[in-house]
Structures are given as C-alpha cells and as structure tokens.
Image 1 (tube, rainbow, N blue to C red):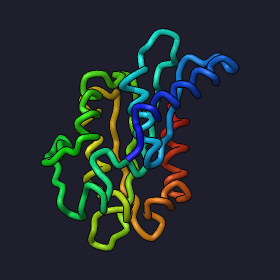
Image 2 (cartoon, helix red, strand yellow):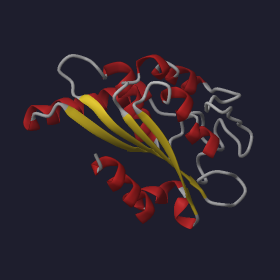
Image 3 (cartoon, one colour):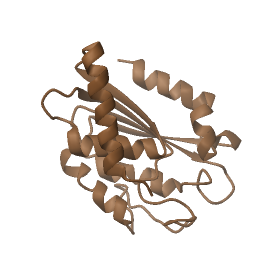
Length: 177
C-alpha cells in the first residue's frame, strides 16, 4: 500500500500551484484506484482550509477504500450493511473513518466501480464491496452520493478509465448543473 497521507499532500501541492496561475475558488476531482485515496486524504487534511478551493464534485473510479484483492481482501468475503458499512474494516479504512466527520457538505460524489461478471463481484483488483464501502464514509455528509456499476470486459480495473460508458457518466456528472 502507498503512503496515502503523502499522496493527499501532493494533491494539495498541485491544487495550490494551479490556483496561483488560474485563480479558482472551487475544484472538481476525478480519481482512479490510488488517486481516490489521494483525493480522500486531501479532503481529510486540507478541505475547508483557508485559501484552498471548495471541493465541488468528486468522481471515484475503482476505489479500493477497504482493501485490494490478493492483499487484504478476498472475493465475496466482505459484506456491507444498508448504509455501506463493512462487516470488517482494514487499517486504511479505519483511517478514512475521519471522513464521516469532515467530508464537505456541499460536495457531490459519483462512485463508479466495475464488475467483470466472473462471479468475484470485482473489477479483478478491487471487490465491489471495497469500492462501495465509500458510501458509509461520505453519504451522510455529502450533498449527494450516487454509485454506478460498470459491467463486462471493459469493467476490468485498469480499463475503467478508458471505458466510453465511464466517460459519459463523468461528463454528465461534472458538467450538469
């Protein structure tokens, strides 16, 4: 696993640098896989800080919020209750629980995950339960929260960010009012 806190700091550094050149007051984030963790650590550590832009919208694609298959998760083992709370939480997920108290209340969230349809209920790297566990972390605070499942061959973890269906979802979510 990566150093997610450091990734969140790097995301902040990029935002600060861009803000110097383009003078914006709100930002949309799109992350895939590890990028989702960078976004969520940015939100935990920096969102709402003076001088930083408000987080308007977040798109999480193939997020491994509560484990990665073959590392700390197995197919069809994790269960979620109706609010998205997992029956077992790994140490990284326990760190993300802070989001339940600090997630920006004016941020809209789109969570996109893949299901290859091979019986593992996963995109091949991340179980759907791990991806969908984001709901428990943010849905009680976020302005809106929605999940979209992508199926088929292009629902594989690394193919999701090259998937035309995902592109359409992104465009509709980020640019609709």
